Length: 395
Ligand code: PLP
Image (cartoon, rainbow, N blue to C red; front, side):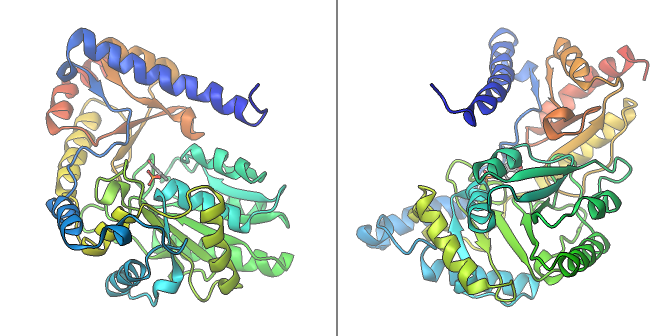
């Protein structure tokens, strides 16, 4: 009785659930500390202490009907203004409350953005490897996802192919930086080139092409790496942000969209995005969490924890003979499978209780993703097994 659109999603979900259940089974048999589960992007650093304190203070100090009530679909104005000012301080931007729509995490933000701008049959381009949910989000609004093949040298986007795939039907391009699953940060040079291509194609087709920058990992950057602020390079940019990773609040579902004034027809787009939030069923972003963000706007997770994990895992994996590029941000390592069929490699790793996600889940077969948002001990204890696994493949 389920709809045609849901059927492929249900089948795909069974595969993800099977992997999750397999992990739980291994943990029940061998003990959680003997299973090296690198499959999930769930932050393991606790939310900053300010978050807990803010929740307590809000409940004690602010009025219940306001804290838990409905508000404008775009979110509380004082919260949006506070975030805008924080962004302006940190990235020399020029936003105000008006440019923000509070969202139910990045996932909902992307859905709101696509619902706002996409007509049935229009195309949305993204670059492999990519976060697989983009396909479902685009299909929610009857768009077509067009995937650009990966540039496996650097994992910066393949702009040569990109230019050839833009058509009169291209309505949006989704990028993600810092990047899941490779940890790459799109460089200034990449963004300038990408913007130049989009400007040229908008002129050629007399169309507007929106660039949607999905940035839940913006704060997770290592070695002092700078994550360029995308609105500065291309005026038709919509930014999707989330506190899921930066404040370790993935279950709380809080984030925002930025729709800058310089974006084409911005007034109408902003207005439509607020309405899209309502009719998508979210109505508005969670009110208590909005109040929390107001008080914790400059709070930070312990990035050094992930950086230490990155260093240990990258070093360990390269010492074991694996090929991977050193992540600049996020908390994922994308490793070349020693055999072409990376699913076979993931299966083989299970004999050492190692769980990884095949690259084909990100439209990039031949690679595997390791999420290093796990304890440091898990990484250190897993390394001898990765060495054995590598040796099994002659590394
Ligand atoms: N975009 C990317 C690239 C992600 O990796 C994730 C989550 O892992 C999301 C979006 C969804 O984030 P949220 O939990 O804030 O909806």
